[in-house]
Length: 138
Image 1 (cartoon, rainbow, N blue to C red):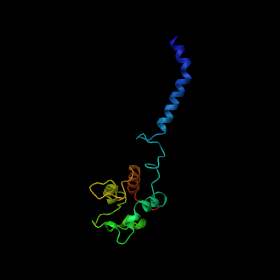
Image 2: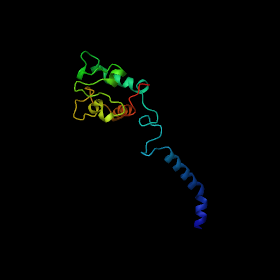
Image 3: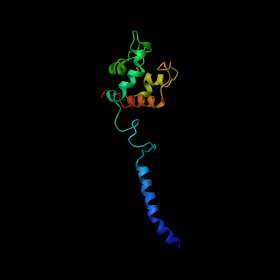
Image 4: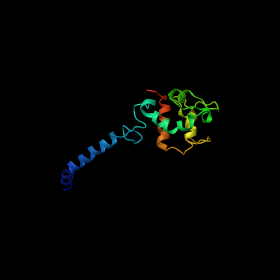
């Protein structure tokens, strides 16, 4: 009798196992969906991902004369090679934890940026990923 019940439910059991495999295969080790833009396989670049973000979030204060904190954020070269009045590299490619922009975005004992209010955690994660990926232009 028990064997008969199992054989009757066998198609459902197989279907559930196949469905479970799709869930497991569709996620990475952290449980994030594969293909997630932040944390994805392709590195973020200035031209494709970051320019619009920086222009809207940074240039209102960091393109005037003199720019706030002595840092001019008008284009890729200035953002990736510039230093602040404190002498810190604003963006240190490959090293988000050593980049002053991250300290300021995360308000780690530094004046908050942008001054208009804190960014979302996903925006900060995007900047962090771009820097850790090497702060690439293209």
